[in-house]
Length: 214
Image (cartoon, rainbow, N blue to C red; front, top):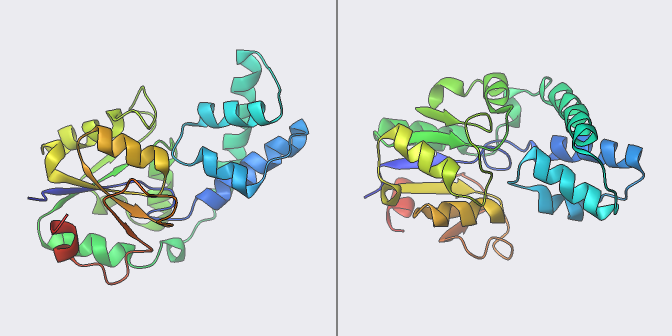
């Protein structure tokens, strides 16, 4: 029986991926590293530190930890500048209606995102109070695909992992949820999200019967 739904944030609730890409692209350009939208797919669902390591790897660039911290902070400042201008209209299609449907049917809901800016984004979208639990990057030690973030969300919701369905747009996130013992619905391209239990394009028209049949 489904007792809880856990949502990733970026690419599921709102398309912040484009802002991450713009900020990482700006940093890569400064470093003289060629960074494309295809490369950006590797960054989805992973931490800021891991994302920087991937970009440095692309440029075959080795830096000390202090410089890496400075660059990660620089990227984040650009990203925060972008998201500070976000509007409610940027919520992805059908999300708010589906979340309201879950609440009406007493299904618990949580956000589980590696982003340390999760609360800022939810506040900008007017969604913060819609979720029973918010787990963000400041509350975990291990990034996806480690299952820590989803297990923590289940614990805070007071439900068992097997009673949860996760909505994810990233391969690393799907692996994380699977390792946590949860069912996963991918949001996006089925040819990429092949390990999900089901894949949807967006939340428009999604009903509870569909998720309960998984």
